[in-house]
Length: 131
Picture 1 (tube, one colour):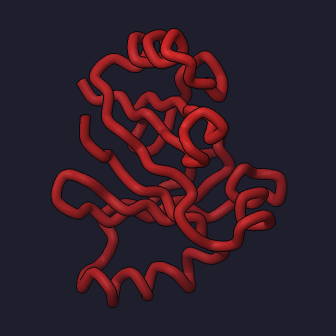
Picture 2 (tube, helix red, strand yellow; picture 1 turned 45 degrees about the horizontal axis):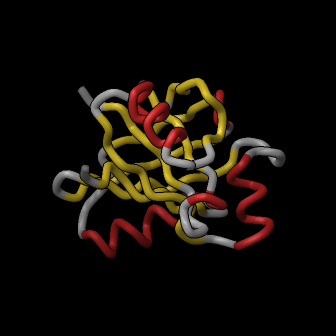
């Protein structure tokens, strides 16, 4: 297993992107809006992983709720799996709580799913399918 990305909730991509450009010494690799998840993201690839800066596109989006409770910061850690349906079934049998039983379409059109933080030591875990 490897880390696919770390998602960081930000109040403003306009403010956060220049900070990360300075920190990383380069421009982002990707930018997209995921309507289904009411989020806009900008990604910086770092080796085999990436940092995704996440901005809410709706006041009732999960990112907006997270920012309201916790402020800016790490929102989730995403791990790569080769077969998302098998991984979800296996993790559920092992006692992890799924956030939705069906995979969703995430960034770059990849299939994703989330594990509830109550079952993962308080960390929201995203699973990203890469074949």
